[in-house]
Image 1: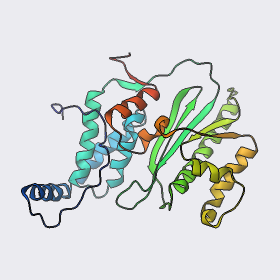
Image 2: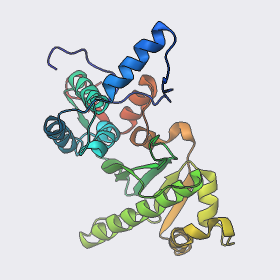
Image 3: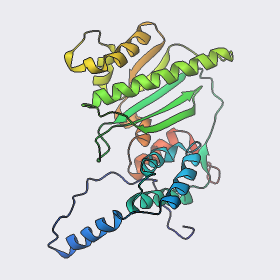
Image 4: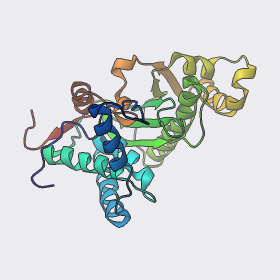
Amino acid sequence: MLGCKPSKTPISVKKKKKKVEQPTTEQEVAEKKKQEEEEKPADIGRYQRLVGKLIYLSHTRPDIAFAVSTTSQHMHLPKQKHLKAAYKILKYLKGTPGRGLFFRKTDLRTIEIYTDADWAGDQENSRSTSGYCTFVWGNLVTWQSHKQRVVSTSSAESELRSLSERLKEEIWLKRVADETYTKIESPLKLYCDNKAALSMALNPVQHSRTKHVDVDRHFIREKVEDGIICLSYIPTELQLVDILTKGLPEDKFEGFVCKLDMMSIYDPT
């Protein structure tokens, strides 16, 4: 990989591939052959060692968190296409060896969490991918990208589940701050780009179609009424967590990397 061409992003933008059953043209024959090669099993030991190291690195590199989370889902039965995806992360890392988080001194005394979910983003089982990032005093301190355990029947449902999980994290951070006598302004701020999910969380009227997520809804609304948190809408184009839930085009990806306060020690500007 030392001689490979660097990649601008750690994961490609998701495209729905059409499976070629009976090729009739040269292009379809080549595509079918490529698909067959990608489905061949990869060396499981080699794959696990590589992805294991990438998981360790993702603890300090939020820009590769989604790509690493995706590759780590195939540890027990990796195929050539999964190994190829892991190699793409290495190509990206080669082009950004000095990139890391920058912590600034600010006057902010807040805890802010941005949360998002890519509804039914997994083409194999239609599960949603949740992501979040937490800013304490204006600096990014925690982040995660993971696949939800159950299938959601709507984007609002998947977002509501993500909101509930992130709220628990935000409350935990507030308790840690209190125990260490660290000043945190109230209420805590939670940002989401799904208006339907926010409406479900704040609306006290029960609905038969949302009964299966009532526990999450009531939990969120209780904290809002107690003045512990403040739910706010954020436009999709400003949603930082997109970088943790899906593959993005180069320009959008780089824009979010900058907003996460990531910079290179070799090019600090």
